[in-house]
Image (tube, rainbow, N blue to C red; front, side, top):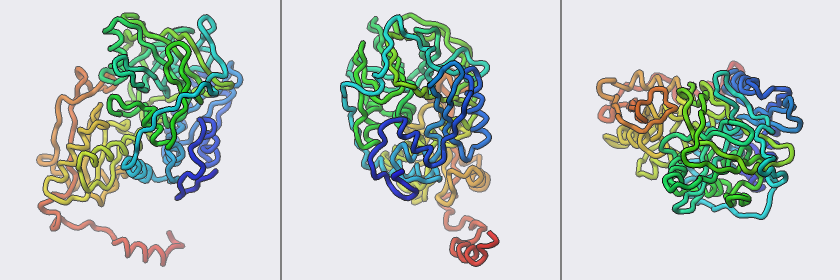
Length: 481
């Protein structure tokens, strides 16, 4: 290992998922599990491990999967502060707010770096064409007992080209196996991938697509967040990596796939061709409605490495194998966006894991003027990264730790007057995964839990020891603490 706590990366970015996996094992955050079956056992084990170890969740590498010699499945690769730090190239820390702060600092100078096209890569070690295509060659998991089928795409990259402008979009959308040669693809209304697909269909044209099912986790972090339309996730991830992502153009449609990917499916969707998809246990902790007709992808090529690793995400009632990483990334993006919008005095942002990284967001500020708290509240609730499927946004003073649920609830209980300090935002953007959604819209609760600015100098002081006193007493009585 070339990096310890407090140090930055010195040897450049890791090459691929496998090198990063070794680094994760070196810091003691990889759990190897042998003999788990694809049918429910992997999904249930992920739930047991993540609910039993919420403070120290490991990455899980499923090995010796019955019926699939040499193949592996990987869960939770970025679901801790230290694994996120390795992925993003930050100094190692076990404190989530440190990673959020590092992300915010980087975004002050972040510049997108386009991918680099290369002639070949490990993903080309094996190519299945036409009649040889079989997506069930891989240990595709059946994750939850009430799911409608086996899902090969959960921790995936759905790669598409905009037919108008030619830019490459990468999103994470669930993909259910229909049979050996077709998979369903569910995209939430309003998402960029769905907008691109609809462009093809409105022109009466088939829509080419790649579904990458094992890759650099940095790409998964990028694909699961709301970037501005027209900014490729390849470019965004390259900016974080500090170097371009190597890509290989696919055989049929020339779509760029990560050169070091583990498994990539290449296929096409046709207008009007659908099959029943779902239900599926989702990240909010609920099953997504009933089955619905969704477009299917005819798989024409499968590219994969020797002894491939299928990356999986098992959405459940939080915490899950990816919920923590979503909280950190979402908090960093909100912090960056509200500051770019001109909001000053932000001391911290956190998206609570119980809110599935979207539904309970907290922003902390050091108040400087009347109305500062409400400005922060509305900015944090309305910025791009918080606009989809939110529920509650809370603003607290800088003496409250936004990552500490007890601290936040104490601030709400003692600094929020419900009649004066709670507002409702109506007709906001939601989606089908929201269990309370009506016609793709919902309402938002905005909670001002800051001390009233007009009383900030006379508000009752907090009953606690000063930092100086605590340090002196702790040093004197260290053996008792």
